[in-house]
Image 1: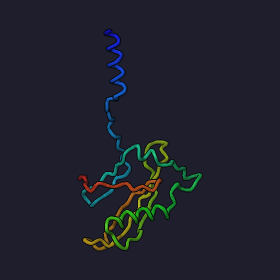
Image 2 (image 1 turned 60 degrees about the vertical axis):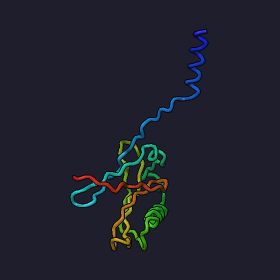
Image 3 (image 1 turned 90 degrees about the vertical axis):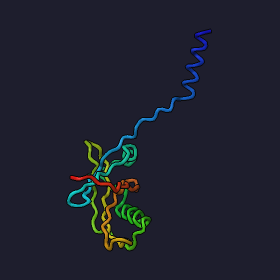
Image 4 (image 1 turned 180 degrees about the horizontal axis):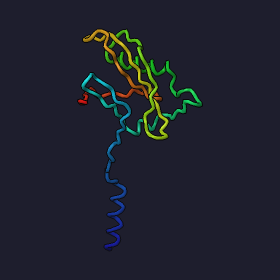
Length: 141
């Protein structure tokens, strides 16, 4: 009887499933200068980064075209109320890590903000077209 009770309790525990969630691993992919004395680390969930396609620049074009990356960046800043944005600089940057082979676009745009005329906006676009949102908080150097 005792062993039957033990089996039932074991089955109940297994079928209910104890809700243990592992902490989300964040990965720093870029550090941006906010001004002369402050920087902002840009992080994203490791799972989001690993979901993007690897790219070997020596042998193939990027998984996301420049045009598609710019369109994603412009759409992102337009959604935040920027008007008349245009690209002023863009880079392809590896995420770091040995043999990682994942890259992102860093796109700088200039816009006509409601509060600041010709504000420079920095947008990071992963190779799947998703935007990496940077936190507004910075840290002192």
